[in-house]
Length: 272
Image (cartoon, rainbow, N blue to C red):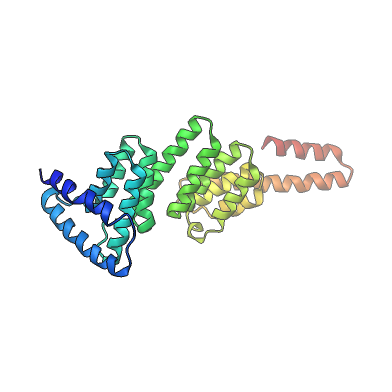
């Protein structure tokens, strides 16, 4: 009864009368205090569910998701002015929507949270999970471009550039080698990953697929001895060293007219 009373008596009137237009600075402070009082009343009846959830559910019942998100975002902007930020209700709703495979709606809600509070860790993690799932779904349908778009959205929302590895893999599989190399170079330039053995290994192996063996060698040299990829990295480095040596031998043999030696060196390179 308390929950229904609060939503009926407060949520819809406030959402319509107070949040349809953003008020001036004085209005923001007054409305912020009113909303804070309503939150305390709501907490008394329905635990710690934030007031914004009442607005969201009120409009979701009418099927207007976009309107609900706008209300939630405006409410948080008001609360930000008052220093009473909170996102438990919105995050839990986004999590529920994601579990119900309503990924687009969940993503919109998470984006609204991150727009107001970019440092919200749970929202960032959920955004990554949703967008990775959307990328996987796109790949299952053979829509590589949509998969790349979803993964790039992760970088825009969370700043997590490690996802460039996944983007590069997709681009390589699609034959978009220059774009893949560009993604790898951007990641390689990020100092945060200079000592990350896993990232350095992945960078090295992907540069190798692109035929950039100098870059491959540079990154594999950064894989530390305690990495599970260390032995494999060392094997690739030895192979690259042998290929470089054989290339010099083949060139020298050709210049000296020793065709058979050059052919033998080239055959060994191919076998590697």
